[in-house]
Image (cartoon, rainbow, N blue to C red; front, side, top):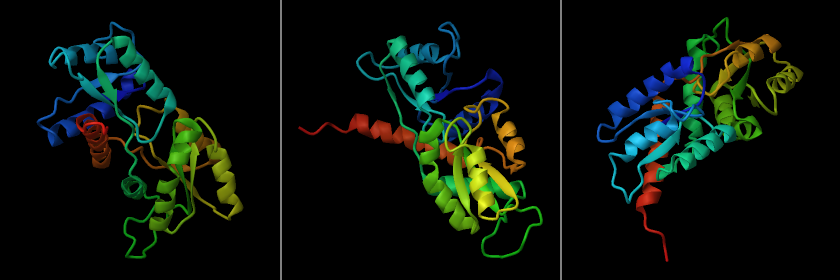
Length: 247
């Protein structure tokens, strides 16, 4: 079960990711649930969990809830945990599965799509609109920004550019990261959002770009790597459930 936090209007990406996961895993019952909604919301976490429980044995877990997050976001994870507890349904919550190399590749693609980075590291051609410094932007505060550091290092190696991580809602802020880049002599900064999309508050990314005069690539969205990471998070939790505890 993919659990998405955010405005109802931002669910298109979540539905796309759910569809990809469902196609890639035809033997798994894949569902989408919203976090933080009213108890009577049929698309809310409690209702979807209750529905799943009717299809599962009473003595086993009804679902593995996978947060639709690229990186740790404690507030969302806490809301999911609360929702599971309130539902009285036996369910496990997966941890975000952070594969830094996969994220670095996906961010590189998004930057290239926006003409903010060259698409090919081998052919050393230049793109007139390419940036010369990157900020990998996250949501989820300091913890999320820290978790993005390995991705930032790998992205810097791919692009041969300085890259810093920053949070839209915490420290280091986008402004602080921009100041570091400008101190290094960077003239044009681009933002690479290491977010799926729905978890960010509407307007925050645009405001961050405007505050430092930077262009931005698109969020990760329904990139194949996102669906892959959701499946890996599910598989990791499933393996922990099925592996007997050592005496």
